Length: 174
Image (tube, rainbow, N blue to C red):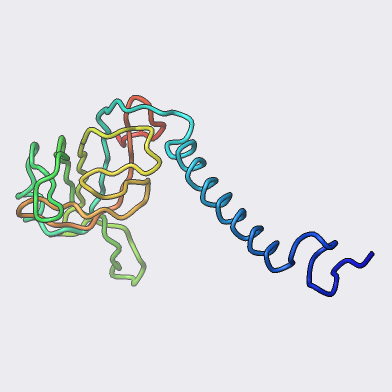
């Protein structure tokens, strides 16, 4: 008995082209089914919760002009997509900016800049802490991730230095 006979049938039962088409259709159905069900199972990781809680994000903006500090206020809402978000500023701390300069001997020294400021701002927003990607002020938040601190009248580039909530493991700088 031949594997493929003169009519192109496998073992004299099934046409080879028909068999390939059936296998492809089954593979596509299996792949789509796997994608649909695996994403529902793993979308939020192991902790599936819909309860929202406050997440506090500590931002560090270095070497900003003093007007940034003067125009940031506790209670200011963050802005994104031409509208206010639920994220708001809960604390602001500023100090003279750390600055590398040279002394009279030509050696590099760490000093304070006479004009610029370093600013530490803590913002909060209610989020689902079990989400795979946390977003505050419509921006993703991760330690050391860039964050644009944007209010109605201030915009400053910053880095995320801390993330804290009851269930997250990050810490807010003290």
